[in-house]
Image (cartoon, rainbow, N blue to C red):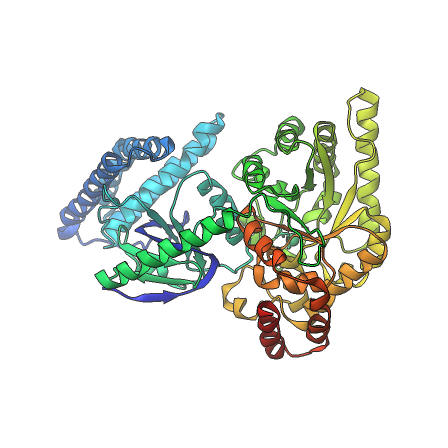
Amino acid sequence: MSFTMHGVGISGGIAIGHAHLVSHALLEVAHYQVPKNLVADEITRFQLAVDTVTQDLETLRLQLPNNAPAELKAFLSTHSMILADKSLSEAPITMIQNEQCNAEWALKQQMDDLVEQFEQFEDEYLRERKQDVVQVVERVIKVLLGHPSQVLLKAQENAIILVAHDLSPADAIQFKRHQFAAFITDVGGATSHTAILARSLNIPSIVALQRARDLIFDGELIIVDGTLGVVITDPDKSTLAEYKLKQEQWEIEQQKLRRLRLTKAVTLDGTAIELFANIEVPEDAAKAKAISATGIGLYRTEFLFMNRREWPTEEEQFQAYRQVAESMKGLPVTIRTLDLGADKQIDPDTARTCTNPALGLRAIRLCLAEPQIFHAQLRAILRASHYGHVKILIPMLTTLSELRQAKLLLERAKRSLRVENTPFNEIITVGGMIEVPAAALKAEAFARELDFLSIGTNDLIQYTLAIDRTDDTVSHLYSALHPAVLQLIEMTIRAANKLNKPVSVCGEMAGDARYTRLLLGFGLRNFSMHPANVLAVKQQVLQSNLPELTAPVRKILSLANIDKIEPLLQKLNLQ
Ligand code: PEP
Ligand code: MG
């Protein structure tokens, strides 16, 4: 049956493809007693489900297009092997027989045992395979629960659309390495880290679809309109034709934008604007270069710390930072120190144990509380500074004393390198993120002690409006245009400009071309955003005349009502 769902579009474009349901690692499985006379039926039900999944995996593997990533093939073979193992295909049968329990429960118990065994492995690679066990079991449980898996891929239509209830940033960073046509989730806010990562995949993405995972079938043909935040399931012929046309138009638009790659970002009145890129993993640096970004304005290093048990060593960090520094060939690379915690949790259990993780021990607070971890990272960044134009950026500053402590620790890291004669840039610049209202209100004081400022609008909006950026139930209230938010951003830019300290915006607002003129009117000259947004923002810069922005922007700043601001912003963008 065809139906339309609405969510929050986080990355534009149109995708048409087959749904691939990704389920939660923690399955909620019911446990019930099976009457003796029905035990045989229950066993048959279990065996049929295992057979179905075995066949599905085989079909999937055979129908993989030639250009599918090699990991995908290996991943399907591993799943088939795991499922064929007696502990999953036979042990549950004995359990159903002996304990008269339902098939799902028996399978879940076996899965838990197996996962526990995998966790004992010394070898990290083997330990990680427990995820595969969970995924295979989830597939079987889905079939058992009457969600029969249809054939996922048809040979001629190889686009896969990920449908998940939610994905942690740790999951999303893994998906970054595969090729999917689109990405949709039931929950999530527009600036949650999962959303940011999804956006960085540069494929149409929608969050906050509410019940997508329940309503969409595995393998079903769906259309994802990431620009409008709309999903259409099982489309009829005319809808399909309409969206194929839209998809082509979008591609033409993208091609036009690509022509701006080498054009200098200069406003109509001749002011040069710097457009930097945000990256999450070293490989992203290539994307930044491909669109001729001014440099890296924000390298979110926390992703190096995810999907693993041990913290990365100083050496491993150094190699990653050096790779980025070298690949940018002298262009600035702004490495942000660890911003773990809250929406970027490595261990989801920690998030559950604190009442307000966003207000808790995160980012610089965590680094100051764990000086050894900070020390290793600072040394790694400093060492990398010998190989390129590296800058340091400290997240979540709230008080000047945090900044001073961080600088002392930086000095200590420098001293330790000097003793060893390890080369680094002695005059490396240090910037701070202004993303807590307290810091924005005192931006001038921070600017005096820092070399540059970077405004993190994602958190600044969250903390100013008291709206959890990851919570879709309040995402309609999350707005960059709230007058209090605008005032804090403008104040921060003004404070930095007054002291002649460079200031940029590196939150999602910088990559949204609807806000480009407004930010230019606030006096912003440096923007940092995901590489995918750079050209659209550049187009807006090229069409803007700074002197003409002053009066309308002043008017917007004087308003107290968000409803009045929106039409004025639209007018500003049309002028
Ligand atoms: C921000 O808060 O705007 C920001 C850029 O940092 P992050 O999204 O990583 O918290
Ligand atoms: Mg932030």
